[in-house]
Length: 589
Image (tube, rainbow, N blue to C red):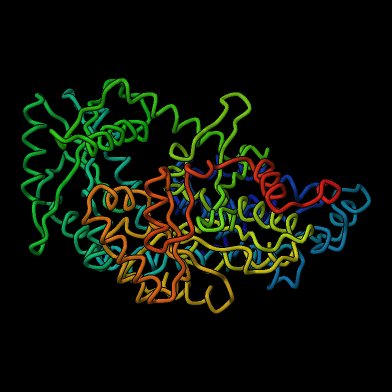
């Protein structure tokens, strides 16, 4: 029987539309039919109130059973599930000519006794609901078929081709492998009498490999590691590529020597790829509580791995109790980040940009600070890396962009049109065009000049898509600043490929150049090069008088840093700007 035939038969047997649709898919998705009926009764609650059609809520449940997110930390899968729900609703509206409520479909208000009486008397559910059921089932079948087709293509093509497909392929790969990995690790923890360890490792300076040799080469490195792990790990050792260049192996063992031998073997196996030297950092967590969530075990291994990256004497560390504070911090951040947005706990701070020659403010950079009502200040170096990892950085950026536009509007209303504010555009935004729509909307709503909102983009190389987006931003009239110039090995290549207007010299680059006469000479030539290319130049992280004097001497006039001013609340910056510009107190008010 087809799904539609099953659903119609269930409806004829007295089950409402929500139960019928869920029941039609339950068995093949591996769910107990009776349990699904119980749950879908609640999902159909809106139907009995005359609200959203029960077919829609049932379809959302089926899609959730098929490929919905089950891990609250898997934000990619959650976003994908939400996206598919939106797509489903749009298709349903289109095919049902806008009818999405029981009242619209049945022509009677099911929530009122008189309406329900007519529905029952005339058998409207059996006459009219099958149309909605047919549309829902068709859409669900299309989505599941598309999901399975892409999943099969992925499994056939292998990891190497992930970048040649769309984001859905990546999500499917991650979700499918995560399910299998978690299942296997759970069985291992339950069945073995041996000790169990999580060994997490990554490739040092993997970003530089991507910059120097291109992302395609970087993908080949990851594929090489994945394939090699298949030969290294036996049937009771399970591994997974968690994200980017981060891998984890879960293994049973008897002695620490066994773990040391395995790590040494991994080092030797991944020492070189196509004549490129690879160095690894290892973090090890030996399981103490087998009832702990697998994600928490991974987190402990991750903390050890990150600590190992800063070690000079060794590239491998075992988890230590002092890492717990980092885990608690991460947990706090992830549990409170949504409330921080809705309750406006994030605050925009502004750091002035100065002209050395004029000794005046010529702009500002918008920065985010998180002021929690109980914990107080949560600093960016604590939450930004986590937000970039789980995707929440998009929401934070949107929040700061809107605040920046409001601040610019506040200034222009007083006639101050000579203090542009720059905002950071995270790399995640540059992978699609949605952020441009948001930016333009903020600018339009606040009726400000586009030139007053500048965009800071961290330097990147060998990414044609990001370069194309930057080209489009330039065509649309935005001023582009290359953030952290000099922090990587790709800066000069990026200048050829991406239309930046201003280079921001990275603080570490500045510090390194100031440490020797040779470095100062290099800095001088960078400034000269920028002028030849007709690029603006701004040095960030300027903290000493010596730096200011050298920059002034070699022709870099614009600076940003603690020597002039620290980041400050926008209200404080506003008062400073008004005072400097000599705006009358009456206008201030």
